[in-house]
Length: 155
Image 1 (spheres, rainbow, N blue to C red):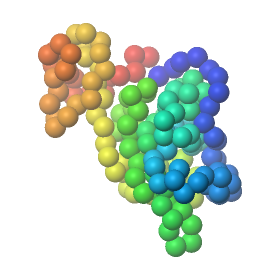
Image 2: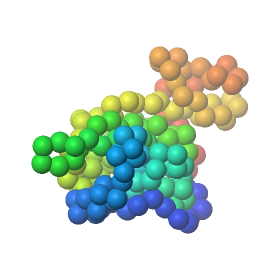
Image 3: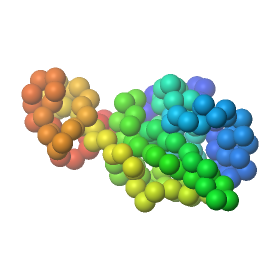
């Protein structure tokens, strides 16, 4: 999805950059998930949870987006929870591969997939974005059937 450019979350492209960033966070901030995006450059960007994903991305296109939390592990930091929950971008669950690569580039231990997957679909009838719950592919706005295949990005 493409939107106008500007601002952005904190770029985290290496273990050293993550170390500096995490050292700046308070214990209360680290207790909550953060907003994240993976830009088209494959680099992780982080912002406080209440930040919009589009703002975190500086308005640009992304390969992945969602919420992420971190846990202290023996010898460093790892990912506790990670989801694709972003109503700004509505990323498909297949965005995990880009998220995993970005986390690996930073040297963070991570799960093998999203710990919470959100299924997004755009209604072909009314064009509204929907979150599909319990495999019920019906638009909550107009009652139309939703496609089984991700269709949110119109480009």
